[in-house]
Image (tube, rainbow, N blue to C red):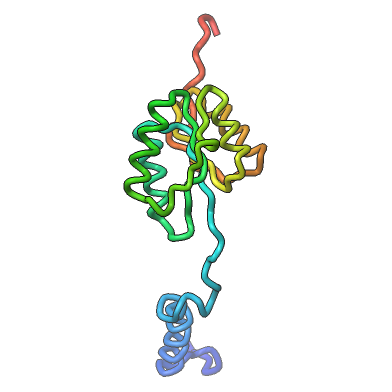
Length: 161
């Protein structure tokens, strides 16, 4: 069988093309990141709904993720949980926890007050039975949302159906 010389790629051309493609793919990892996009200077305001262990842990991780993140609002059904979480987060992230007393919300409507407080991101860490209502409200308010798993509980099975 004859091979057309027009369609044959030499080893030299193959290596040259591979090197060019590899260099282009590696460039973003090698070159400084500010060459491709400017640094983020906007402060991201976080609101925590559910101040128990999981919520406090999620807030701690969010505050550790970036230098331009601050916690500005907290809400829980119980004041003692909120105050304990606030105290612990302040001890770890003194410069990033900027929750004024009027941004500490207690009660079953605390989630809505956190959402309405001017935050950019809402961390939902309440028991799963409450999350569908909280998630719906946060999305309706055009907020970014982080929600713990499971997102909701299973619906109960009605006998005979």
